[in-house]
Amino acid sequence: MKYETQKIAFWYFAVAMLLFALQMVFGVLSAYVYVAPNFLSETIPFNILRMVHTNALIVWLLLAFFGAAYFLVPEETEREIESPLLAYIQLAILVVGALGAVIGYFFGIHEGREFLEQPLWVKLGIVVAALIFLYNVSMTALKGRKTAVTTVLLLGLWGIAIFFLFALYNPVNLSVDKLYWWYVVHVWVEGVWELVMAAILAFLMLKLTGVDREVVDKWLYVIVALALASGLLGTGHHYYWIGAPGYWQWLGSVFSTLEILPFFAIVLFTFSMVWKGGRDHPNKAALLWSLGTAVMSFFGAGVWGFMHTLAPINYYSHGTQVTAAHGHLAFFGAYVSLNLAIITYAMPFLKRRAPYNQVLNMISFWLLNAGMAFMTFTLTFAGVVQTHLQRVQGQGYMDVQGELGVFYWMRLGAGVVVAIGALLFIYATFVPRRLELITPAGSLRQAAE
Amino acid sequence: MWETFTKAQARNIFYGGSLFFLLIFLALTAHSHWYMVSRSTDAAGLTDSVARGKRVWEKHACIDCHTILGEGAYFAPELGNVWIRYGGPEDPETARELLKAWMQSQPSGIEGRRQMPQFNLSDQELDDLVDFLAWVSRTNTQGWPPNKAG
Ligand code: HEM
Ligand code: HEM
Ligand SMILES: [Fe+2]
Image 1 (cartoon, each protein chain N blue to C red):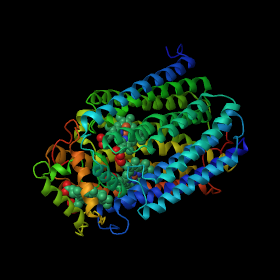
Image 2: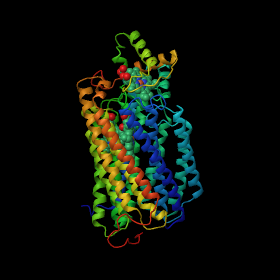
Image 3: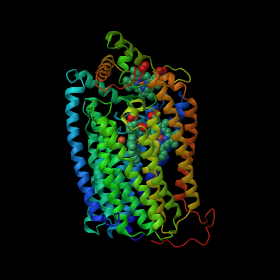
Image 4: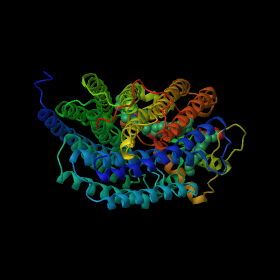
């Protein structure tokens, strides 16, 4: 850790990991209700469990993005963060908002659009926190060294804030409501978040592989150019059946298919940087997570996204368990993995010590990835069967669900493995032990940077 | 070719391309917005009670169990066409009574069957909700869903 203010990142990561654990608990509870439907139904119904699960996910991902920014912006700009005090005030606002939202949910205090259930005061709190953040980090960047990594990261974070404003607009016409709801949901994950992802991965590649900045920067711009060129009009894959004009079936199909390209470019980028780079960085776990991000986001977003993105296919699969399969692997492969990568990289610096618990961390990597992959397969099978029976043959929804029990049991099993992997990750990163489980050949070298 | 392609060129393509596609996207959004309020939805039928019905829908977060027009949670039946499933277009009076009765009779309490909570809605709220569901079912969704099962 070269700059004192990088320490701010530690607190963002810590709160993020608490919410990650909460997300896991509520994921497992929701999956349990699928197999034992009377469980909790009178006290905390499924919709509340799901709300806590998905909201905890979104908020912890955002907190980790902020933490990553506070960690890497000082190194990139070669300056301390403009105001640490503001950074902690921002965190406090977000913590109060998150706690308030979760507690409120248990008392039925929420709004009613998927992912945007937060009450108005929490939404406004998020806007204020985002403004504080953007001021703080933009000032640091303006006064410091300019790099492509900070530029792209900041563009992404500005985009997050700007598109979030559409969450405040809720027209009475349901179709129009959906038109702009996707401005938050799709343009986030398949637009501006990809900028954040590419910037953080570029930073990790610079540090872990030692490849020349010129090379990394060029890749970075190519990836984000592909992301926005495909992802903005790719929003059309959500406009097929909600009352929008028919031309979206063409535009959405073509452009969302092109959305595979940035994810494929990320695979090429990370693997060729590791191939080219001469550095033997001691933090192996961070490298594993970085490559894992590239591969799993390609499968989750690219392959599982493409599977149901063409309009004639989506006509049958729309809103079935196929969507749930894709939603899980895409969020996990891209944004969960990315954040676990940067946390794995940053924590030893924040604790001022050489990388630790790497073997445990890598075990958690395999538990999380294997569990997630299996969960995705079971949901995909469930979704395909559901699509056939319900959408092709026309059997009633509840009758069809009755046939899918075995898949939901397997999903629960896979989910428990994922949750254990998550807890192990948190333990491995936050509780340094003196000894590695397995001593590496040659003693651990000092961190290169 | 990769060698002669410079970082500055990549950057310019990113800025130029993104702006270009953003403008097209905004223009098509404006057109889609116009199309929705004037062509594909029943704008004239969007009464106060439909608007209130949407608020009831949101207040109880039905979306986190159900899908509507295919979006939401996958735990409970699609409701964009529930009005049609209940025979609303042929016999609106009966469909209304059936839907209201459904809302009042939950949870079923059947062991091993997914449960829907009791929301204790007033008669006015129930009517608004049914108006909302009936209104949604009149949206031109390009022929989705493939069949009544939703
Ligand atoms: C990391 C990037 C991505 C994430 C995090 C993500 C996540 C999600 C989520 C959570 C949903 C469900 C939304 C809802 O609740 O209604 C969804 C839907 C969808 N995604 Fe993605 N996605 C990503 C990338 C992609 C890509 C690249 C494609 C296409 C190649 C794609 C195609 C789709 C389609 C077609 C749907 C609609 C499914 C339906 O009709 O029910 N996604 N995505
Ligand atoms: C880091 C890992 C996880 C991520 C990124 C994640 C993400 C998500 C997302 C994005 C949704 C909304 C899906 C959509 O609208 O398409 C969702 C719903 C859900 N998740 Fe997870 N989740 C994770 C872990 C888990 C675990 C461990 C379980 C437990 C088995 C679980 C069970 C569920 C259930 C039951 C739903 C509701 C699906 C429905 O509406 O029917 N999730 N999750
Ligand atoms: Fe999308």
